[in-house]
Length: 171
Image (cartoon, rainbow, N blue to C red; front, side, top):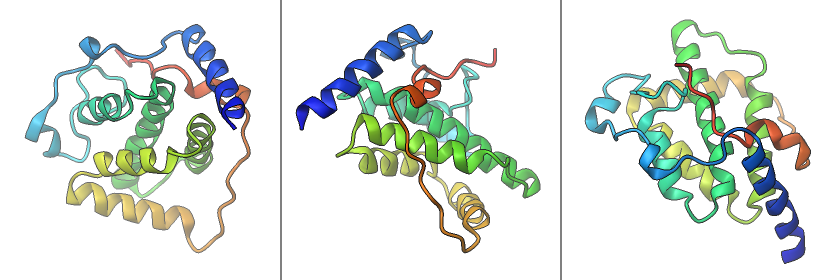
């Protein structure tokens, strides 16, 4: 069993190192916004990477035990946050959101088969840390599912290259 897990982790580590980014050092993280970050649906994103600063800090703090999972979780947070904002603005969702979300979730599962569910649950709790965020996310999720079965994609290590580097800043 450890051989199956260690091989993908080695490949993921190589991909993360070579894919322009790797992980962010704690000294490079933005300052925690505190209560100011909870005042709006968008929150605060001082480094303009598409991930709220409080969520970015949470991801690094909660996942320091497995650095390979940090970049995919940051991507998941970025997609989720943008989908929530877009849906709240006009009730329209980018068509690729669900596929992107499921793809990223499966990449996280590939890295951490035993712990991916807990990591994603903790991310969701950090992302939806106000009533307004929860309500918008519930409306978004209802619109996505709309009573249909959702198939999860099958991914390989190579399929996950797109989420193995830290999301770029929009600066």
